[in-house]
Length: 86
Image (tube, rainbow, N blue to C red; front, side, top):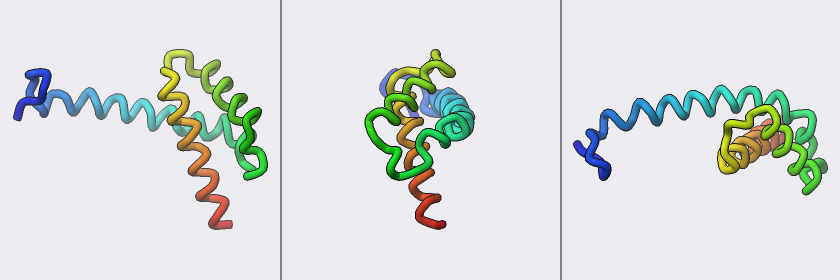
């Protein structure tokens, strides 16, 4: 199977997997870093979100804005989901 770039589809997948592994690794460190900032539902205001984004940008300057945003969103969802169970 060939994708739109003319490369076989099987070759495109390993690069995507490496990116996903990198983001999973970053997620774990982001959760540890941001949990104190975002752990309580009442802390999800503009200032807390700004601080969370800022902290991630400082510790991961190589990530794009979209990647930072995705990590913050993932951490918030995880914390909300865990909060519902307790």
